[in-house]
Image (cartoon, rainbow, N blue to C red; front, side, top):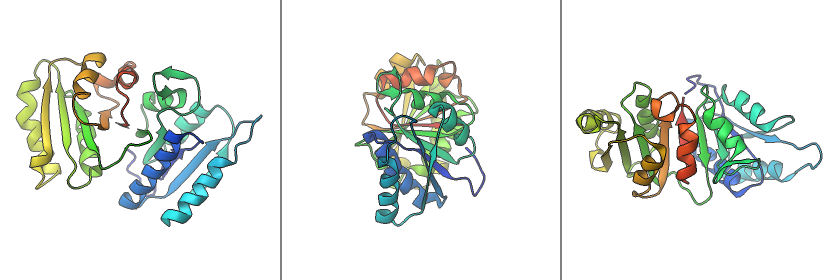
Length: 245
């Protein structure tokens, strides 16, 4: 995650319900972390869309936040991934317009998810930051960043589920519980450890899907997310995703 104290929160904004929900979630996060918001809209040459600009203006007025709305032209996936690398976090709708690469996952979302240099939030309508946070931990050093991000963003009273993958999953439980407890002091009753003896995306999605709906948190550099596995997991699990670089 970009550690620049002035790094903005960026929203890849369009007229889809998921994208509008992503804007709403970004406003809530901006109030929490006190970083500026930039809303980017990829304006088609042949069919101008005035709706995103009005959405950003209305949201700024309603929520009393400053939103810098900018229109950009070119390949949306390329433009958004490039901008995302200078952001604290870039949010987009899971099902943003574009060729559907996976079920409920648009091409822009896939490009952001697979870009190694940015932290992204892929949001969907009807989701809430008050829902549980579901962290995948494969024991690798990068996986710690996913746990840190979840502990930072999870509101008080929110359940934290940690899915420990790999053959040695059971041996990591105590260590992870200690790490989570240190990051979330006084909230140990909300931390749940789930050993999972595999990291196959389909089986992992089935296991995670047995818990309550929440935001899936994954470290982009961890083995469980490499080589397209994060997009494959997203195909099987229609949850909001926070992918941390």
